[in-house]
Picture (tube, rainbow, N blue to C red):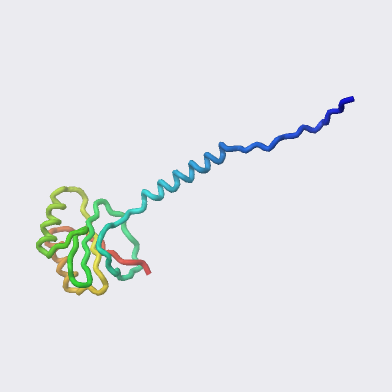
Length: 134
């Protein structure tokens, strides 16, 4: 005589659909977080520290003043007149232009003021001074 068990044996199942959903959400999360990371390619300088917050800017042009007094607009070295010509060309392109001024801690204060004066004479009033947070 053959007796059947009333209990059925369930084999374990691997539910892959929820795992695919989780992986998809992680992928989307990391892709969106990478879009918010902006890399500024410019000369390495030793920035001073500040407690003020940063500003989200439309069209950014970094101007860097190194410790030895050299002025860089993005990656290109200029004197004050060359910098003014380059910024006039950028200004002529139109749009909302914001200058990010990055000066090394050891840069001369006079050079910083000369660059600010040049920017003021060009009527470039949207200027952000780059610092490192404390």
